[in-house]
Amino acid sequence: MSSSRLRTVAGFVILFLLYQSSEAIGARLLHNNVLAASLMAAAFIAAWPVGRGLGYKGFDAYALSLKWPALRLLTGGLLLMGAVRLAAVFWGLNSGVYAIGTPAPAHVLALPLVLLGAALTTFIPSVAEDILTRGFWLEAARIRWAGWSFILATSLIYVLNHVFHLADPLEWIRLFCFGLAYATAAWKWRSLWAAVGLHWGWNLSNALLDIFITLNNTGPAVWLSAGAHLVTAAIIWLWPKPNDTI
Image 1 (tube, one colour):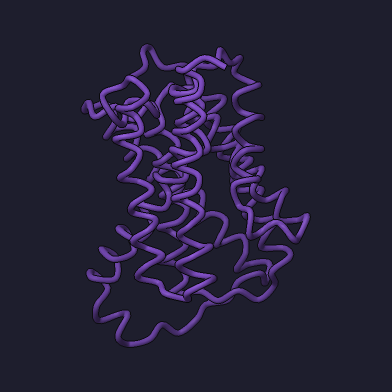
Image 2 (image 1 turned 180 degrees about the vertical axis):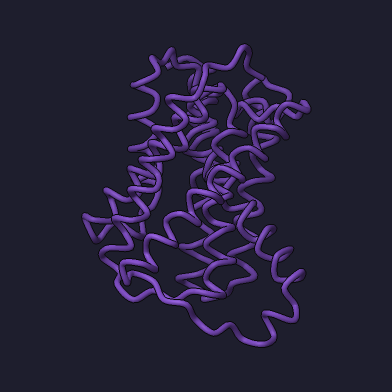
């Protein structure tokens, strides 16, 4: 194995271990949410020097350009996924999967702070996982993908990255559908920001909607989430091809 390939493998292993340590050590072993969040932040921060070590400027190793068009992709993904999530919630309310809950008064009074906190606590895990399961393979791995092979392979990698949540086969299906939507966006725009916008949009909308709705039936909710992501993947696939990438 060449030295450049060894560096690539080592870079992935570093990111993988840091990412998994958040749940393995912080959440499961020590039951410390602050430590878990700190380790997740470390996984994100470490991506920059790892990218440098692989011969890039930093986050561009994962197709995370810091140019202004990236903001358009991030915002567009947030808005699209927010709309899809709301549609899924209305469907779930009408079918009895969800019910309107009564939010705690403290949550209502501190809604701006809750929004800010949810945005921060969902963004870092979303982008850290996207780097590991999509961005690394889109750019740093230096693999010549066909579109379908990238989407399928990284969707499977996304499933396997959830090493502590694979006891239920239904969860494999749900996660794979999630991966299809996010990977399709990353491939179409050749930018991880497109995937981050969707991923963050889903996690953020969940954090906020949990204040106002309750779950009545887990099984149908899993299929509803999977279906929402398949619809999202179809929308992105059918979206007019961008004139350029970033």
